[in-house]
Length: 190
Image 1 (cartoon, rainbow, N blue to C red):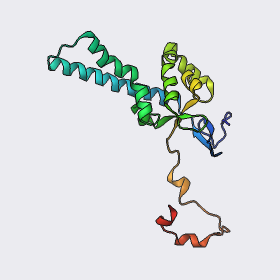
Image 2 (spheres, one colour; image 1 turned 30 degrees about the vertical axis):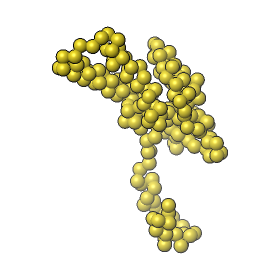
Image 3 (cartoon, one colour; image 1 turned 90 degrees about the vertical axis):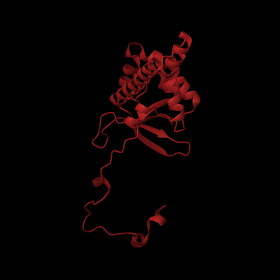
Image 4 (tube, one colour; image 1 turned 120 degrees about the horizontal axis):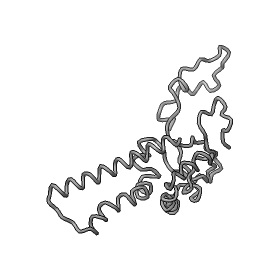
């Protein structure tokens, strides 16, 4: 299921997901570096929001109660990952920038319960970098929240070059099997 002793065709660790239609999908597991950069990008976004809010409130001379400040600053920091993953198909803005997303290991679409379980365990994963340690040793790119939710974070990056698909050198003895295919248009290929 996983490329352990990395053969030449397996540059990164992969996860095998079998869909409900018995289609086997192989995805690259998001690297811990990509996940870390995504988190930093999310933190920078939230820090920018907090700084912008503070400057705006100061410039407008608005004096809010402590409870209102907790709501304005605390709610985005607390619920950002949960809300963004639910609304953006398993991605936060940082994950989208790194081309990674949350996926279920059974091939289904993650639902609110999966995202909620990942979010609840985020605090445990952040203690002493426990989540990073689990990701490094798990083999499926899962932190504790992912293990509990049956999810992982996969890379959606295209790892193919144009040379991998076009302009391949063919052997001289290569014979075209379906010669009529040259008459197909783009409309037929849909």
